[in-house]
Every structure is written in structure tokens, then in C-alpha cells.
Length: 199
Image (cartoon, rainbow, N blue to C red; front, side):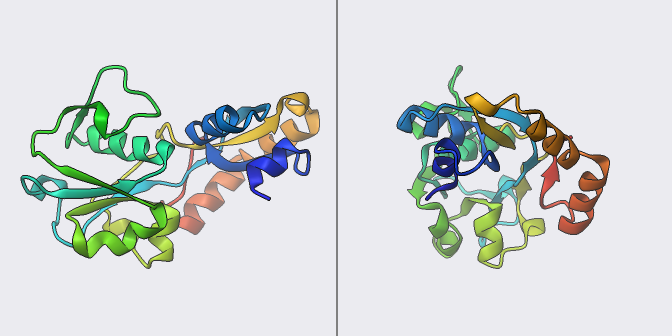
């Protein structure tokens, strides 16, 4: 059973593995009565390339691979917008797609692939936007990314609960302990900046 489904059905009291766009998509698609709680960490998405040393070197008409799931496709596009590669239409939100491009000055082409396939696409594209979990599994060093999200990413992970137990004081105590200075220090030391606390 998927983690979000387990939470919705009462097998879990809380979880901490999804960002808000993913959670909202699950609520809309599956009717779960879940609510987001406090932020936890950012597992950064980054832009990787086997062909160019920097985003400034992306060629005219180059190809960029991005995830094909709705929330992470938008995430990839917003990261590319942040560094000036593209510009999205005014009002493009967490479901933005390549159809929402307002400016694409280098006439880049976008290939949408399953997230797990993005690392293996690197020899065939000029760059790929890859979430950290798939990058690490593929042996990519996040420090070699051309750009990585920072702790201010709107795709930070959040604690989620069912609406009926969102105010449970035991959960509040647990989450407060998690969001402590000690845990923050551990995350920073253990993951060397590749997983980022938001508090």
C-alpha cells in the first residue's frame, strides 16, 4: 500500500515524504481527506549534464529531459525559470507544463520521461532535471549538478496527517522534536548539504 494511501486509511498517523504539489494531486485524484502540516526538508532537484559544463552553455535548440509526472514536471520548469533558462506564463502554477512557456530564448526542446529514466537519458540529451533520490541511485554526485534547489524550494517535504487527527498533541510534540536544532545539525552534517532542513 502506498504511503499516502496508508495514511488516508488510518494505518499511519502521519507521514513525511511528499511535497505539497504531490499531496494536493493525491487529494484531488483520490479524494483523500489529508492536510499538510509543517515543512520538513528539501530533497533537491537538480539539473545535470554530460555534455555542457554550465547552463550558459546549453546550445540553441538543445534538449532537456524533465519528469513526466505533473508535480515534478512543473518543479523542473520552475527551477529552469529560476536560473533564467525559460520564462513561464504569468500565473503558471504547480501544474505548469511545457505548454505554459512564455519565453524559450534558446528554442530548447523538452522530453518528458519517467523520473527513474532521467539519469540514463544523460548521454542523449543536453541536460536533465533529476530529483535527488534518482540521481543518487544512479551514482550521480549532487555536487556536480549545474544547479540544485535550495532550502526555499516550494517543493519542500511536509508532514501530512488526516484531517481528523491533525490537532493530536502527540503528533505536534513528535514533529516539534523532529524540527529541533539537534536534528537540523545532524541532517546538515550527515548529508553534507544534499538534503536541506527548512527550519
